[in-house]
Amino acid sequence: MSDGDGGRVGLREQKKRETRARLSWAAVRLVVERGFHNVRVEEIAEAAGVSPRTFNNYFSSKGEAIVARHLDRTLRVAEELRHRPPAEPLWEAISHSVLAQFRPTPETADTPVRDFEQWRAGVRLMFAEPGIQGEFLRAAALAEAEIAAAVAGRTGTDVDRDLYPRLVAATVMAAVNVAMQQWMRRTDHPGGVASLLTEAFAQLAAGLPTP
Image (cartoon, rainbow, N blue to C red; front, side, top):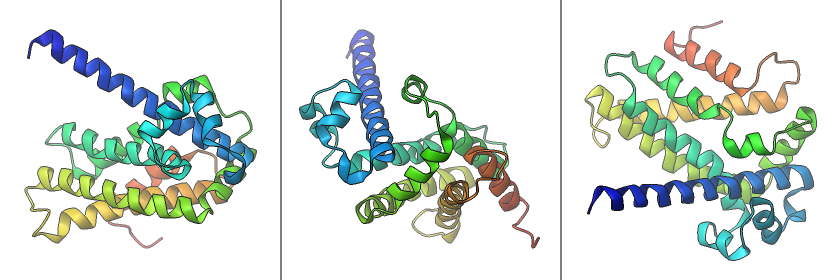
């Protein structure tokens, strides 16, 4: 295959990722604004600028589309972790890898959140949907396996034999989940999820000392 062919494959893959991200963000935004049962696939597709058939090429349900944003973000944590400097302390590398995924993205910049308190309330209701909870559990298992493999690669451990990489991966996912839950509950916190994540990983790096 020529370099030109490789470039075209890369562009196609990038376009597919962008379409997937737009669909997932549209699903999240509409469900948070209107409620899970008040949003149709056709409306999600229209908001993302594609056809319902295109939606079905990427996702089998609204729930899968909603959770795809979280899944892709946590999978990118593992990808980023593999590219952090080898000499960087593990928890510092993990913190950087996680925080990098909570920066604004093109699709969120195009349709920004305007009322954060209303948004927060809608996110809480969305997470309470049983179907969404099931999708989140599935996504967490996939992401945790990838993060464990990345940790094993950095630490010279075996993901199948050693406890350490899976324990670290489970802790990373727990920290992300707790930070998100804390953000949804606390209206008085001065920072967003990124601030809570920074605090969480600082505590983990310090050995989670007793307050």
